[in-house]
Image (cartoon, rainbow, N blue to C red; front, side, top):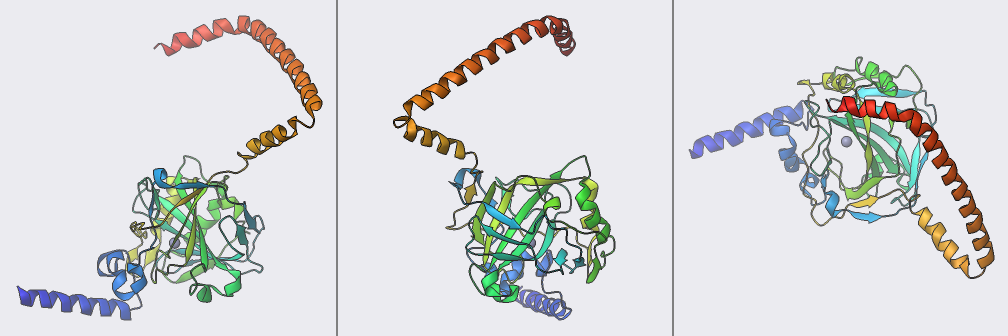
Length: 345
Ligand SMILES: [Zn+2]
C-alpha cells in the first residue's frame, strides 16, 4: 500500500512538471485545478481570498460617495479581444483609458483589462455568489491604482487593484451591445489568438442600468497568483443576455479543448465584512425634510403659506380624480366585469 502511495505521489509530481513545462500553470480541473493552486502559489492559500459567498443578512449597509465612471461613455475604437487560454480578455489600446474613482476607493484607478468567468450550463458559472445563488457568467473589469504606475507594480500593494464585477442572467431578448463581442469570439476560439473589434466600443453600453447599488469587500485575484490586493465592487443589477450569447463563450478553447468552465469555487470569508452601498439619492429626501424642520421656526409663515397652496392644489386634484373616476367608472364597469368573468376560468 505504501509503495502505491509513493508511486501516486511521483506520478502526480511528474504530470504536474509536464503540465508546467508546457506553460499551462493552472486550470480548473484535476491536478492543476483550484484545490492545488496553493501548492505552487502560496497566496492562493491565504485568508482573504476571492471569490466569496455574499450573505445578504450579514452585509453592513453604508452610504458611500458616488462612484465616478470616467470615459465609460466614450466610443473606443482600438479594442482587442484575446483568448489567453483561460478566458476571453478585452483590452483597450487607445489612451487615455477609462478610469474610476469615488465609492470606497482612495484615488484614481485606471482600466487594465476585462474578462469573463462562466460555467458548463446556465445554472452556475459566476465566481462570487449572493445567498449561494450562482449566475451563468460574470464580468470582471480590472483597474489598477494610478499612483502605482503599472498593473504589475500595483499588484505589490494591498490596495493596488479594484475589480468591478457584474453578474449575468438570462433574457429572451438579445443584448445588442454584446453582438460585437460574441462575433469577435468566433475568431478567437483557439488559445493564444487575438482579434481587433470591428466596431467602436463603449463600456457603458455593456453594463447594467443601475450602477449605484453594489457590494464591496477586500479580497484577491481569483486566478493564480491570487494576490490579496483587490477592492471588489460587485454590482447588484445583473446584465441580461440570451442563452445563445452566453453559449458563445463556452466555445472558447484552451490547450486541452473547450473551456466549459473557468470559475474558482467560493473561499472562506474569514474575518471580513461585506459592505452594501445603497443608492444615496434615496436618502436625499430625508435630508430635505431635515432642512425644512430647521427652517420651520425661522420662516413659519412661508411654510404655512406653501402648505395651504399645496392643500388647495391637492384638494382640486382629488375632486378632478373623483369626477374622472365616476365618468370612466361607468364606461369601464362592463369591461371590468368581463375581465373578472374570464379570469374565473
Ligand atoms: Zn476574473
